[in-house]
Image 1 (tube, one colour):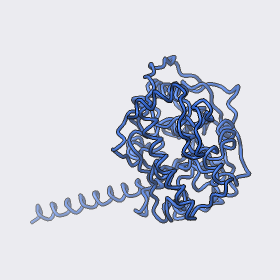
Image 2: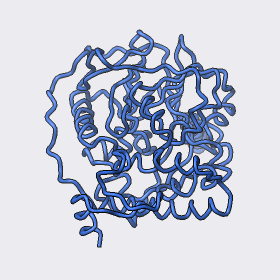
Image 3: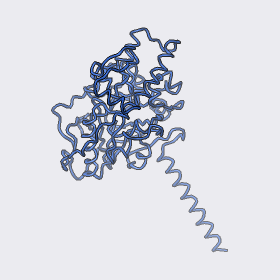
Image 4: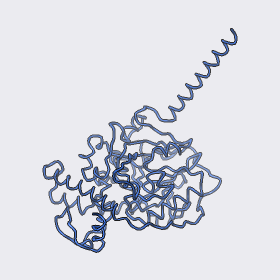
Length: 409
């Protein structure tokens, strides 16, 4: 059924535009409509708002249902129209601006939080995967404690509005593509407050991209400077909304710092990077492809460097085997950068890789400078490990004393 439809589409035959209720040739569509990441862009959602669309009304519910069906059809349609496989990209086996031996930045610490999950079809994560099988991917926020620049967040996770009701907050279109789950108090601000930090302690927020898994709690940190690539920002402002972004989460931000990678130096195997503070502690890497201006972030922690992948790699499997994701803005650009990531890890084995949505991989990659905060336990993972060690030590002492008493008798 779907193969003939895709063949007809490539021939430029007319199809029914479900949102505008009119027939148009494929060539007449805005280009971003054909990209999975932009399927619900301003051509759809903004047009509905201009036409008087109001969430919650009877008419809006009918439109939401059509959009949910459209979202599912979109996933099937994109999956059926598989592009031909790409050849492995050649990356020069040479590391640039990567001094040896490694020297980290003293006092730099990394805290890692899980802020909910999103249940998605396997094919959304891996091109060619099953549409019927689902994966629960974690939404992860990284908090860097810098000795001179205070608390820095990398992403802000899902909005607390998701805990009140995912569909009412994100709409049926987005929740048809992926269903987010967030417990009360699991948003990043609530977790920071439980550790004694407030929104005013966060001085800087780095956004790998403007998808809702990174921007959910953004406007709850009003005094923070928000850092994003200029390419990502300009694209998001032009499109207003996409299937994986929500402009309401970032359109009130006034304190932007836009990063332009033009003319910057290479880093490792990547083409360009920006030293955020000029001290080598936090390096922003130009890594577009999944989105128009995606970034990866390298931290020079004291004991070992870590690379936060952003949407360049959702999972360790994706990074290790260069498995294409289901949603990308530019397939060839993502492919090139994914191979650069793979080569970087091969040439620099000391580098710990932290995928964007893979908590198990992060627990394995954990270094001495990282603290993992497991929601609901009331204490970080390394604190629980310390308590376990103390209990085991006390048990051995009791057994030793018991053995001494038995020998004495």
